[in-house]
Length: 265
Image (cartoon, rainbow, N blue to C red; front, side, top):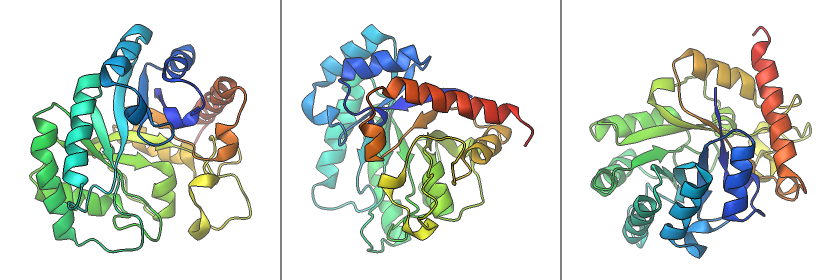
């Protein structure tokens, strides 16, 4: 397996510091964001590309276009702007997250959104990474739903899945789609008091031996099924963001995951 780094793993670091940390950890693939931290809104794509080139890292995605499955209002304009930014900074893909406020979005609207996004992405050489959110209030909880919509659009490789170990667990999914997956996000939950139904982003820490989400089992299943892409750290917990030495914490998590993978299943 190989690890990648999402900037949310160390949001207090500048873009250049983040890229340097990734390289120091042996990772050459990174994800930048438009929220925490908001690189897209604060740095020009030319600056981002120059920083990535100087550090020797590949920007595998920008997180995230939201809500990709509600193609109305300002979303078309935002999608165009983000796709232009991604192409200009050298990013390979856009992560696309569904509406997550309790409202339902019919399957037909998901397909219509993908149909509208496809020419935008294809003309810029980008992949759309569809990330189901496993929360009970999510309008697209499972990868099976996402695969159905992608297939209906005519599956030509423009869209691939994000397998997020947190959301996979929350949705109660058992099915893996390793050959349809373009990116894996990893994070753990260690709080013993929170129920699965109550798990939220602030519970998401770095993966360690107390992980309740069965990250290692999920990683094993993906690798055994033929997944060959990166595993990118995406912790949302404030205590992780506040770490004075995120590099050491990430190194420990990487070593722990590798050690568990070497043990018999």
